[in-house]
Length: 178
Image 1 (tube, rainbow, N blue to C red):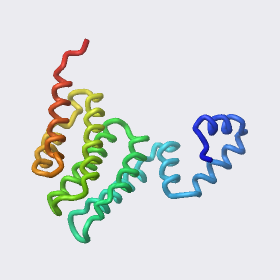
Image 2: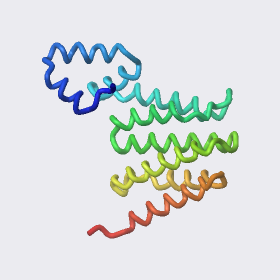
Image 3: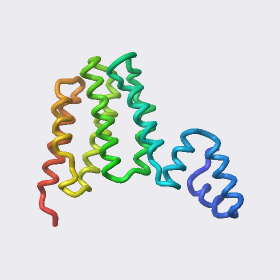
Image 4: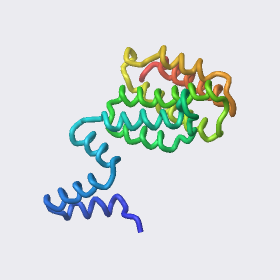
């Protein structure tokens, strides 16, 4: 049976410092993903997570050389790990990279599975929500507009959805705050 977060917190609360250190070392040694996550959290070094994201984006969406896998699971996992530790502006940049890489891949290779469109729409929506939390001057409007323009002409309503999300985002920015 899987350990719940409540159970984990209770168990960790019952451990003394040497036991906690041993547990963290064991987790660190267990996988490269754990090493990157701990480095990001403990040292503020996000480079390993960002490098992993770049590698996964290249694998899923590459536009030169070998064919891309067009399997977004690894890229989505790497993005999620990076978003947990990145500053808001860096997180927005990463989300936009994800969608931009997907759109470039679409331009290079054409249509792909419908679920990939949904994944990109979800990441774009998240990016817009994050952008709305930034100071107006820090929102990359030109980059967003270029992305919306480049996303035009693709299937499953993807282009329309990206444009709709961006229009909704702009309308919300124009609404006066109470």
